[in-house]
Structure formats: structure tokens, C-alpha cells
Image (tube, rainbow over all chains, first blue to last red; front, side, top):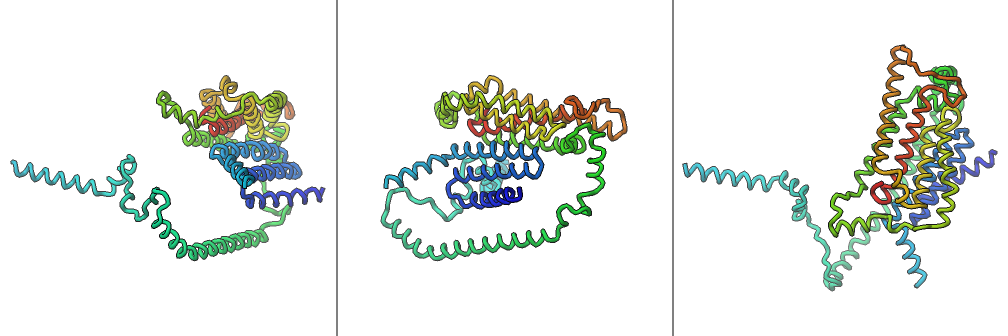
Length: 90
Length: 326
């Protein structure tokens, strides 16, 4: 159990750092989502299941969905796809 | 008579000139959108859009050559300073942690008579087997009321920012704008995989959310988590079947009615219970046997209220983000 906990904590720190250093916005949101999921498992281990449910529903679910919708509205996803296509053409 | 009239006119015109040149007038113009007060005052002009002009290119190149070094220096200094600041902040925080009481110590300030009373008399006074809900919705119910109000106010703020006004829908320009802004037209229609998956998942998610809300005083969970789960289920349903299906049961009016009635019921019920409690009166609310579904007095209806508000808020956020309305 101790090993599992340390692995989760290391993953949490890695996710937090990776979220900052991801250059594209869409992967950053996905990393943020995984951070929330790991956090909810840690809440479960710390014996507070109510917080785990809230973290899973709000942090991993609704917040990231709102991020996706905002990215779609400001064309943050499409531009990246176009950029990738251009690079392939070159 | 005539002279005074002329003099008066001159005076009036001078006052008007003074008013025209005053700062207030400029601000008023700017608010009305007639003229930017900084238009003439600013030295920076907009770049010309006459295509690649050789003179402009030469000046830009020379400008770049002279300013590049400065830019590089400023950039480097900025990053160095920010890194130093971050390290300083982290060291101060870690240094401060060493002064905090050790984790799990019996003499910590957390272990005072308040928590002792919650643990010892919580079940007896609130009738809830889940201490956390008993604390949130009984001893500190007004905290939760403030939370629900914050959610309601944030929804109103998002409405102010993102709501799409359909007052002047008839004009061509407005129709074009709504067509562009309305996300409904771009959503995938009849996505079979999503629809089949959500047919199975949405009822389960709803039942799970209702279970969490109704068992808030018995098992972990409560209004907020259950409402968030139900809101997530609503969003999934909306994504699978589109706005047309959700508009049958969830419109602007239902949102207003549900949130307002839930908030006012919460406020009145808890005010009554606090009033009777503070004046040592009989509240007349039966606590029931602890462990049963219909027990612990006001906690169950208050949980339902909070759950309704949270579910409506989550769905309203998503709908407002998607198309600026419900």
C-alpha cells in the first residue's frame, strides 16, 4: 500500500509539472484531467470518499469538459490540426 | 438689453467650449463610442496596410537591429527574476512548514472542544450517521447556504458574459451572427456510438447521483457531489442527443424556478431551525431513528435542495458555454 501511495504521489507531481510544460492546450487539459483522477484516488486512500466523488465529478469531468468547449469556441483545437497538416506537407 | 443678451451668449458659448474641452466630456464621448480620447494623444499610430513598402521594411529592419539586443536582455532578466522569485517563495513556504505542529499530535489546536462535541454529541443532536454531512448541513448550515448562493451568482455572471441576446433576431446580420455563434449546427448529429453508450450510462449515472443525494446523511457523499454527478449525466445526455431533446424539460424558466425555490426553501427552513435552536424552543422537526432513510430532521430536504442547485448550475454552465442560452 505504501508503494502504491508513493507511486500515486510521484504521478501527481509529474502531472502537475507536465501540465505546465505542455505547449499545446489540448494535451495540457488531458494531463490536468489525469491529475484530477489521481487526486481522487488519493482522496479515496485518505479515507474521504465524499471528496473523491466530488473530485472525480467536478475536477475530472465538468471542468475539463468546459475547457474543451472553450478551446473549441476559440478555435484552439483546429489551429493545431492545421499546423500539423502543414508540417506534414513540408 | 441687447448687450447683456450677447454677453450671455458669449458666456454660454465659452462655457460650452470649456465643457467640450473638459476631461468629463472626453470620457462621456468615449463611453458613447463617438471618439476615443486617446486617439490624438497617443504617439503610436497603426501600421499601414499598403502592402510591402520598401521604406517601411527598411525602417523595421533597422528598428529590429537596434531593439533586438534590448529585447533579449529584458527577456533573459525577466526569466531569471521569475525563477529567483519562485525559488524564494518555495523556500519561505517550506521554512514556514517546519514551524507547524506535527501531524496527528494530540496537543494540536485542531483537537479542541468543538470537534470533541461534534464527535460525541453529533449523532444525538443531528441524527445523521455521517458526521461530515451532520456538520455541513446542521452545525454549519449557513456556510453551505453561502456556497449555494455563490454557485447561483456565478451562473448569473456567466449569463451576463455569454448569454446570447435574441431580441433583434429578424435582422440579417443578427441572424448570421446567431448562425455563427450557435454551436448547435456544428454538433455531430445522430452519433450512433455515443447515443447507444449514453442510453446505457445516463440512467445509471442519474440513479447513482440520486442515491448519493438521498443517502447523504447515512453514507459518504451529499448534495454537492450528487448534484455534480447528475450534472455530468445531463451534459452527457445533451452531447448525445442535442439541444432539442433537453429543451423539452430544461429551459431558462425551469432553471430559474428550480434554483430560486431551492435556495428560498433552504434559507427559510434553516432560518427557522436556527431561530428555534437559539431561543431554546421546540422546533417540531422529528429526528427519527439514526440509520433510517427518513431521519435526521432537515438534513435530507436540505441535501436535495443543494443537489438540485448544483446539478442545474453545472448544466447551465455547459449550455451557456456551448450556445449562450439554455
